[in-house]
Image 1 (tube, rainbow, N blue to C red):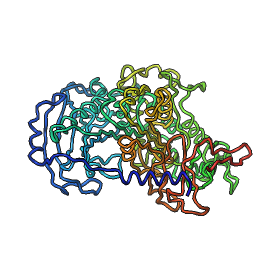
Image 2: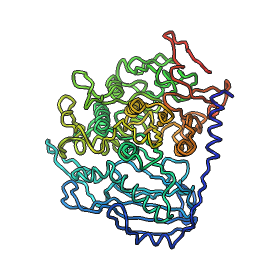
Image 3: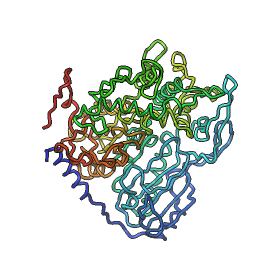
Image 4: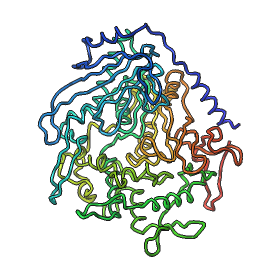
Amino acid sequence: MSTRRNAVAAGAALLAGLSWGFEAQAVGAQECTALASAQHFPEPTQITLTQFLAAGAATANGVPLPAHCRVQGTAQARTGLAGDLPAVPYGIKFEVRLPADWNGRFMFQGAGGTQGGLSNATGSAGTASPTLAKGFAVASENGGHDNSTLSKQVVTLPDGTPYTIISGNTFYTDRQAIVDWAYNSADVTTRTAKYLIQEFYKQPPVHSYFVGCSTSGRQGMAMSQMFPKHYDGIVAGDPFFVPPHISMSETWAVQQVASVSPRDAAGNPIYWQSYSDSDRALFTKAILESCDALDGLADGVIDNLAACRFDPAKFKFADTGQPLQCTGAKTASCLSPAQVTAIKNIERGARTSWGDEIVWNHRTVSGYPYDGGWMEPSGIPTRAIGTSTTPPGNLTLGTAQLSLFWFTEPIAAFNPVNFNWDRDVSLVVRSSPAVNDDPDLHDFQKQGGKLIFYHGLSDSGPPWPYTAEYFNKARQRNRHGGSNADFMRLYLVPNMGHCNGGPSTDQFDFLTPLMAWVEQGVAPDAVVATGRNFKTAPTIRSRPLCAYPKTARYTGPAGGDISLAANYSCVSAARDRRDDDGERDRDDD
């Protein structure tokens, strides 16, 4: 076994032995009921539920939950605007669950999208099993608004076409609601949960953790930047942390798909007919044939992305010599030049009509780099193409929000799919409370905070280069020397879509290695993940996720089991390159 695989095995053993125990006074139904009359909340708060649940009375992900106190309430209740509605109720709804047998830890359970609903605070997001079942106190919140009290808004576009703004976006007219969704709801819920923990257990949490993806990945970043003492450790996945730029990336991708989509009777693009299932399979076959084996193993995963030089306009299949791009009429065995052009445009990112990159507020609007899961259902299709029964996700998410949340002055009657890259970029806001990209993490770092990022390489929501760029900038900005200089990790997940999905190892637990880092000073390197949706045998696999900039390489025996994480090592990308003649220059250590 190699030195690196020994390190992976040693790390796994360490995590397996991580203590979850903590001595606290006995608590039960009486202490739970007493929380209804608590008087000293950090913000104006109304408790709406205190309920003590016996062991096994509830489950999460099929796991029986221990005896615990369930508390719900609303903080900062008020009325405000919502689209064309003048007065709707707003408030930060929260749930906190407090196990009778507490391990001394607190976890914030993040949510995604525009939120607008209250999740069960079991800690089942981003962890291998519900953390409530392991003795964590857990909190969740609704983002400061409740979609059930909002309503869709129908506006008329300049051409007379009706345009529907879904209820989940209509809080765009209320400035405080945007602040709540940006960071205030997470801040208030954190302080409220810690107050309830103190009241229930008569002591504060020993360690506090934040776990979130997408919107809550961004909120986790806000905690490290704005409230550095709230959390000892933060897991921020696929973060939507520069929304104006990400919405522009998403809008550009949708526009490219629309350019090759047939139209319905009203002239609207039929997005899902832009690329047939066979078209998508052709693209995936081509990119894997071009780049999959660059890491030494053809397994449906591109692990040497830095060496990938795939050009769909020039690629020819090795077995037939057939080019991916049609040389004549469109057939089932090739993609039309227009389809290939749209694909290349999505990859390279937004441009003006004369070909210049879009640089706004000192940041280039990113494209979506090619990856093995790029045209898989959870990749570009889910957010930019859709299906025969579901529209592209970005039509109601990032793209739809562009003219509502990310214009200096919201324009409800602006169809973002018609965004003009020569003139409309000037409408985009230069700052927003939901932009959380401050690389100065000195205060978080100084108090011992640890931060783990992860991002799917086939994410068609926030493109992963934004996260990598921030990670590199923050690492450079906060490099002060000493042991505290090492406080961040980034994990890029091949083939994975937005937060999960795809033929990828998308099932992982970053919380446990984060705990080992915070509580024992053991920094994570490889984190073993599993996946059940690989397209070729073995369809179920485990592999290490490697701390950036390292990537996974198969180092097991020839013909060995590619489904076993122990047969892989994490290596520096700089040590796995190809010379111009195609020969590999590899240092296996």
